[in-house]
Figure 1: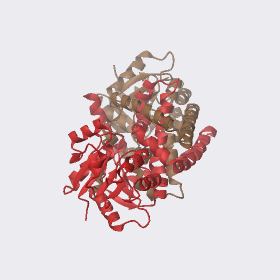
Figure 2: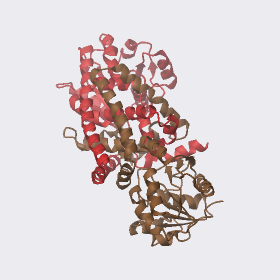
Figure 3: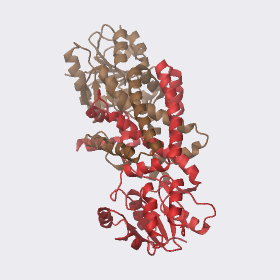
Figure 4: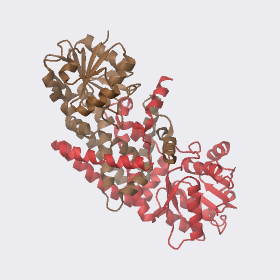
Length: 308
Length: 308
């Protein structure tokens, strides 16, 4: 029980990785793809992200049993609507968007005749575009599937199996809860990283060259996250506004408390806060969700880059 | 022109790395060490962090031409004061602390008869203690030296050469400017990371297990930084209070602006902010200050960890 014909709309980091992962781990399936941008289509064909890169979305989905939209959250409704006739009636429609409540509503509205089961693989890098994808992106990562109530259970389990075949662990969740969880594990961290990198670029008394030179003190980690795709992240924040603002409010309260501790010189409060954050790091490593090597294991490579 | 006898007080990540780096890159020098904690001394001896791990600080510094204090910023004055008689008169005194103005004052007060030239290698990992150090820690990293006015120029240039021998690039700076630069490139990022990891641990509607599972969406990066040594970071914030609070104020203003953009749905403002942060990442990689591989190159290793 699997999909033998899969169409990917949008051939960036996620779409490209899915195309490559299908060819690697589900070689019996045929994968077609389409991207609005002709240059991306050309590059996708060169890299072989799909068996066939089509010249229209209609052509890509024509024989699909599964269509996965891999476009920015804000573009999904617009990408899906014109395909209402072209997508076969029995075809399952899914996506990879980082927010789920709004996307589920957009897809349901754009494709009222189809079964839609949204999904979100929690995996990525700071790179984007047709050169960014790789087959192993989903290995050992979680994919959250947010089925609507009373959905087609056979299609749901086929989708779950599909993601497991690509290497992911699958979890089912309501779209509302997904949006809250991701607001804290992904959206808020990105917002904070974008902010601090902006702050550091705008100072009068510290030059940009100094910020770059001494970034190994911690700042450079934030610049990686803040190098993520701007279009996608704009859409994430606009489509998950409520949960992001809630989490941001909590963060601001906590930051204000630490600010006060610094101002009044309350070393004990600082020490307590800094001690209890260590346990969560250990758990993340134990669960295989991060590299156990110090500094993500990157030091050696930087050194080599520097010397060469 | 170099130091042939070096004493390290404090054998954690920094002290241990200096000891190992001296043995690797400056093999003609002899290095002694001391740590207040007997268990750390025992482990340091086992790992061979120094040629001799002494049972007292007095013994360690007795014949030193250079003493480097590698203890938390708040402990430097207390560690240095009893050594006023024991440190030879011609010996240069330095340190590796992350804040400089306060440490310079503490050292000058504790050792009024000695020449003190503070320094700060901008290098580290999230690990601490006698097992954390490694010889290549300073390779390709910057070391900021903050000489007092009218300092001994021969000693200054010997210290600069010492750090260059250990692999670092050296920059001279006033302690005041150092504290401002590091407030933005290191102290603020740590404060933010500690805060967000605390926020995520404290939610009622999202469980800790969910935070851990879906941490690959960005959160896990912050947990690495927030796993750093609590004692040291408490002291950093208390000893660089003014500059940290200034930078935090700037950050909060910028965050408030982005919060507003999300609330009113100003996609253009978000997109603009998210676009201009990419350039600084590119510069950091070009300058050899970070790994150019996506996701710090860590994905493969996580996968292997997971599968084994």
